Length: 309
Ligand code: GLU
Image (cartoon, rainbow, N blue to C red; front, side, top):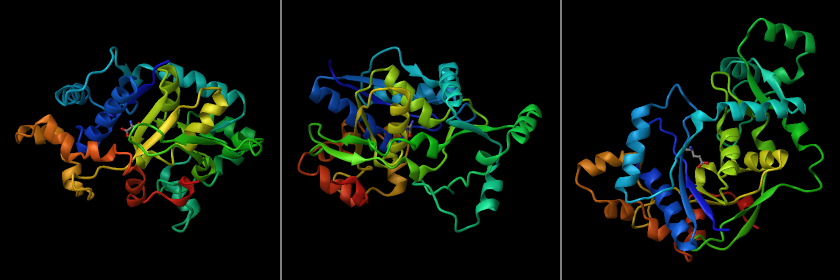
């Protein structure tokens, strides 16, 4: 079975150099391993994703010289599937409705509250403890709610077989290592948002499985989220892909690019006369995908100790 890689942008803005880096790395790894390369449009956030941005995104990728398999899966066509899986988890007692607003959460926890790996306030569990009558009353009144994962329940009984994943081990990514997963660091995370019948975590896990993705290669900023993805995969009986979280974009000299260069839209580089080959150099692809540099890059970008054996 050949490896399957994917690049999965969210079209809520134009693609920038960081996206080009991820897309080119995925395509290059597919090439080096004789694998397949997919593009998936992660457009669940219907309030922010726009049609013209989807078209612009595919056009930018084609301009970079990438080729991917058709049809391109769009997550906005998958809401019923996400909902159905959420209902299954709800039926197992693993999800509960949460009516809290962001403001209420912050008021309930105070400024020194513990944070999740993305720096957001950890949910204090307010709605987990609602009594059944109160919950039913608020649902009947039509109050908006999100569905949260009851993390303690989802983790109960898992102590025997701790979660983890395989990181790296691809040509140019450094050696393979096993990373222990710590989903509890995210607390009772949201699996169905209030305003959108999906969430990043649920959609990404279901679609990677649907599309037979064997290798999830994405930026280091999503490293910690993989713990939740592994938990969901286990809970739903889905296969565990292998992962590589590539260092965030670095220039050809190995120094981190300034934010303004890294977040400049690809089409602006293009309008200024840059060629796809120059973008590849600017994004540092060939240097990032170099066996001898794989680990050092990770350290420079602040991987924490628990990622190592
Ligand atoms: N859609 C996500 C993003 O653009 C990436 C998801 C992933 O690669 O898992 O940040």
